[in-house]
Image 1: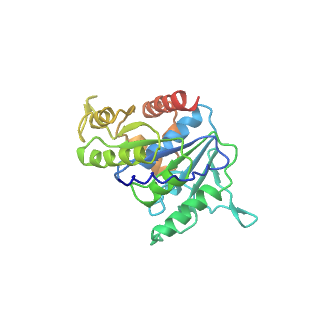
Image 2: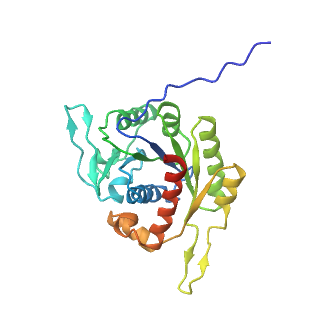
Amino acid sequence: MSQKPSPKKFTKTPINGTKFTLLVSSAKGGVGKSTVAVNLAFALQNLGLKIGILDADVYGPSLPKLLNLKEKPNTENGKEIIPINKYDAQCMSMGFLVDEQTPMIWRGPMVISAIKTMTQKVLWKNLDIIIIDMPPGTGDTQLTFAQEVKIDGAIIVSTPQELALLDVRRGIQMFDKTGVKIFGLIDNMSFFKGDDGKEYKIFGESGVQKTAEEFNKDFLGSIPLSQDLRGSADKGDPLTHSDPKHEVSIIFEKIAKKIKETNLI
């Protein structure tokens, strides 16, 4: 009887200039992953870490808007890209290189080439951690990072409705199959507080936490719908940076502490 071929082994290249690489992922679009990624990054900065943020969503980059960045990065020797510094964070996005109205009509190989440029040809310097805001789904970008880049861990963001959780289950299995450690799941848009002080869970209740338990993953916390969180994103100054004492910023701080204490120390 012929033996099954061994699983293909990939050479995973670390991102130079950082001690730790963290993916922030969502299998479903529209769940607020980019807002979570950026606010989590600055919550980690508030804990004393030197941070970088890489926007890996080639087709729909969010970082230029979330940080109100309009300038284009410089290069060193015409080869390596110098990340843009904002709020003491080193930042890189495909959105810095093209006009915001220009659609990225690229096939998979071009996307993979762009990812390799942003991970291997950007001069990240002396970072404690780089937070990578992934595109939604389980396609070429996710596989490239999982198979070719040294990743220390991933976080999956979801809303609690079942439609989103169906894709979360696929995302968990993708990371498990490619050997990327999942630090935990975050329940975003978990509830909103009405004028009466009550919590209204319009997208369902406890779905993300139950999914974490189903796959034996950590549940990191619940983030509510918040006008202040949305407003700070629209202004380009994340809430965890502009108002670290805000009740939502404190939730991010607790999540950041869990990540730091459990995985970074």
